[in-house]
Image (tube, rainbow, N blue to C red):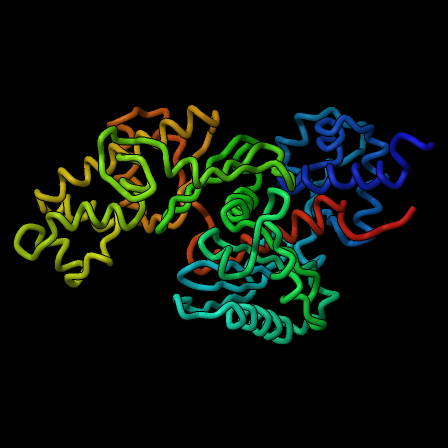
Length: 411
């Protein structure tokens, strides 16, 4: 019986490590790659030269003078930076949520080339969603003069609330996307990959950050009719993520607080879902008691957002201030508990609808209630609204590029 790692497996592992390091560390030299991966410079040179020849990597020029001086290189050697070749292949992505379906095309650097969306209602059928994704993806490929061989894959993220409608079921304890994958795998399409959109949104946000933030645990919060939580660990591998939506929604943030069927009193779901926050405002919402907020939302409580609540407080809607402070106390408790539970260095907010000013006010409330340390860990997602499809793109890049060591190869 044979044992150990074959030469082909070792080659794939080395290439995988090189690709991930180049992407996460930003443009990087062979010298730095060698040090970070603990692989000899000769081996790194051999690996990267082969990947340059295949088009996976490109040399983008010399390192800045200060960076070159930090390394003692042999006389005459230059410190050349490597990066992922943005145009090695192209990537299609889509996200299926309860409000809309987004589809887009991007480069290997997740630079957006094309995008579109379709509103989604309770009456939008599974087949209509599938057909829109296929038609939109095919149109984008045609507009860019791409064949399916030019595209690394089509990645599709499904929000948990849409799991049932898309006929995604649990099998042996994990979500089985087989039916959806087969429905989208038509002859004109590249390989299809599907996954949990909450995790994929956190992955896409981390990929867009690249070298801005060192590897760290990150908690990703999606705000909607449900509050979805994803924990993204440092390695960001295919299995290195966890979603805690159900457990988080049952956590208590205000003992003896509001009731909601199926959830404990004062739970995250009962206090902080979009509908729960709007219900708290609805108790004081009127043209007379909250004139600014009432006018800003045209008299529709369903239009009230956190951003507008902050504006109403600033504009002098005194009745709003007490409610907003109570809501933000609850958010502060949740954020503090998530940071402590998961040892997270960053908390990313997605779909909160906050303007730059609103985000500052959100952090100021958190700073007041639980301190600077928690407030400074909070950031807004770089993937928002019409660019949610980047979550699907991130899945393709992970599964069909980084984890495979790039293009298929032989010994």
